[in-house]
Length: 316
Length: 246
Image 1 (cartoon, chains in turn orange, red):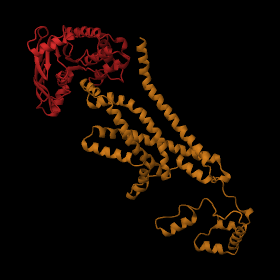
Image 2 (cartoon, chains in turn red, orange):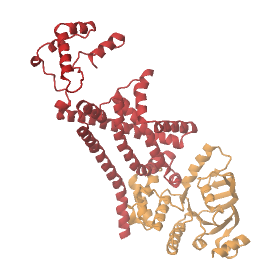
Image 3 (cartoon, one colour):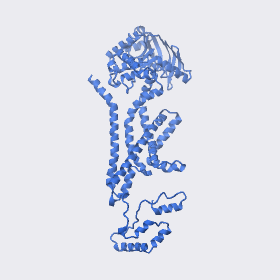
Image 4 (cartoon, one colour):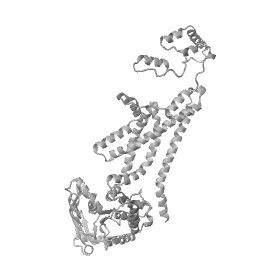
């Protein structure tokens, strides 16, 4: 935040205070029509005049904005300290190494949010699915409301609600945790439907055969139904995971420093929308393609065993 | 061993079984015949507790099922009953994610808590007796229909049931395989098994079943020794069915 804004807020509010000394210097600029040198010279002369006769200092002091940095403006240009360029990712001196480092950090955050929320979704999706499928009427009803709420409203709105809405009732979380939990709860709704469809796809005869062999419902579910349902659920589950990877970008709305936020911030500062866009896309692809590949391999592995034997029995 | 008395079963407002009564003596085979929709399969599903009965009673040794029992007591007795009854469905319902061996040892190891090596040994000798020992490590879908059926039989036998029930065992078999199955089952009968076989194939039951029970419209029309039912049925409806089936 700029110092003038900071000073304004701190002076107006009793609950805000200055976090630290200013750590980065910037300048305000005046925009003029091109080639209007006469006006430019007049403006420059005017600024020089109020600097040299102390009018500027008087004004800034009046508003509590005077500090040592202002003194440097009065020295000749050559003596002015070079602004620390480590922070500077502007088009004039675009630091690619710095940008890649920041993108990498953002990518790590993206991966953590994706895995964390998928974990929540996979775990929480199961009780939702079972509740909606076999639970008592009231539980079925509650699960359906949950599912329809999270599927029927945009995930972006859900994140904004969790991040900005919940603190008003005293439930504040850091942005990254909000994104992780928010996406997790959202995808749990989708996963529950994947599970439910898979569970319902198992013929009733599988249950009955289990019961007739003396199994109780829990044993039949765990040993007979679940392993079969898992195979049915796997392809849509991996699909959802790849979608979730991309949906982590909605966390930019609550300023989590993940890839989409990094792209916006870096590109805004530098104007390198094209190159950064390509770089960010490559990051996303580098993460989602191996995921899709892994999922396909797992699916094939589950099927291969049977396929090989099917072929063998044909040969027999 | 089994006594069924005035058994009534309703489903969706329709009476499927209208007072069915019969006995099955130990070490005998009862064949239940009748056209589709006569209630044969529903009768089987009542006998193994998949359907709750609405009237009459089923007695199996000391276990008695009656519609007046409270739900918890009924299901407790059904659990007891199922320890004594093995069922081979028309559609088999083998577990596709388990090998042949896995299908057979699943219930012994997890329900009876038989140690795995012992369960496997028993399973292998059962597979031997149905001629499938070499296919123990295969998955069900890689087997032929007849082989799958024999796996289902071995799976049921692994729980040492006193009574073995079959629903339409020949529906997916060609005549040669039907004859093979009959020989196999005769072997089990000789070893003292008791069976109830629901079938519309009279040829299959001839020479296998000791008694036949002809059902029509949820009622027992006629029952008696197999020879008598097949050769000199008394009821005209039985005569019709037998003559058409032959």
